[in-house]
Image (cartoon, rainbow, N blue to C red; front, side, top):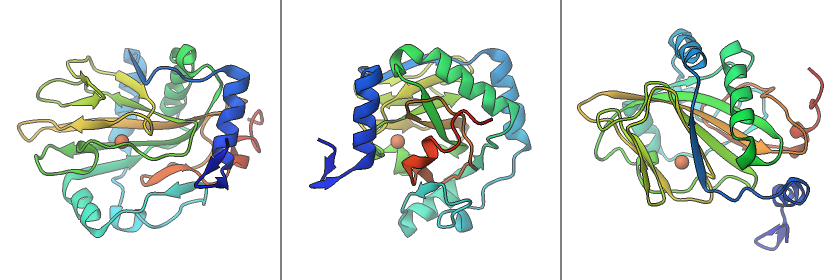
Length: 238
Ligand SMILES: [Fe+2]
């Protein structure tokens, strides 16, 4: 049934259709490693990006494509204190290379084509009581979405990790990438220790009938597309 709380939900209907045509995603998570040259280009790109001004960005829409998260004042204060955030430019070569690599590498798990929704990067100072993504949670996105986390500096005891269900993912090389069903499986980040920063790149994608690279501006506080029409309006038109 394509219903949420008794109401017709287009995202559920769309994901049901994609599953009928291509099959369901059966695995909760899977991992790989970004090739060195793409990882290097991604790091070089991030080094050139301005810091996101969280205070204005948390509530303002950029081009009205993405639905935004609702954050409490306490969460905003924690972001300001612990995060450096960046929005990845969707037209940059490095981001396009990452998207193509994801669609290719995880094709067997995804089963369908995908549309890339949002691309951001953030580093954080480890802190015991930071909360947020470091507490067990699911993301609550609409059906059909997955996230890919990329750790350009790798993961280790000092650089932190990612826990998904019963599995702790750490001790991974630079470029480690994890794709997971962010709204179906409990997960939490493991912060870096010793005051170090852990850089994470987060790509959000949605399964769709046709493939499409990201065609709207990234938003640090973006969740998923406001309208399913955006999956198809520009698909196939470079
Ligand atoms: Fe999450």
